[in-house]
Length: 95
Image (cartoon, rainbow, N blue to C red; front, side):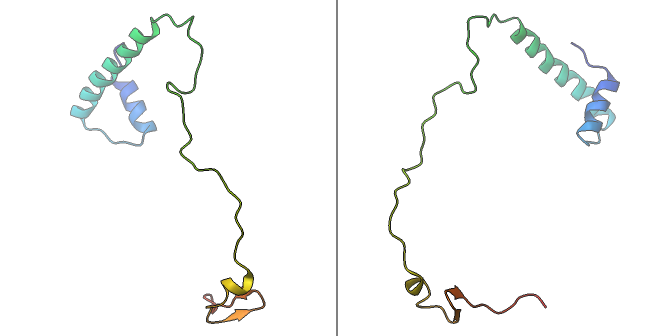
């Protein structure tokens, strides 16, 4: 499927890419070859192949979320330079 110059310019406009005349000719050739590959893929019989989102099985690499006791507010704020009730007290950063 040969792309026309206008189609390449339209694609370039959509991608917000400026192309020189040489690049337009090169992109026309390269994009046309890419579309030819898709034409070959369209001919492959996939009627007996179930749809899938992944080609390989996914395995979770995350560890289990084990509940553990946390620090008390006094332990957390023990080394705080300034505190107010059960919160860190910081200087205002906005005027």
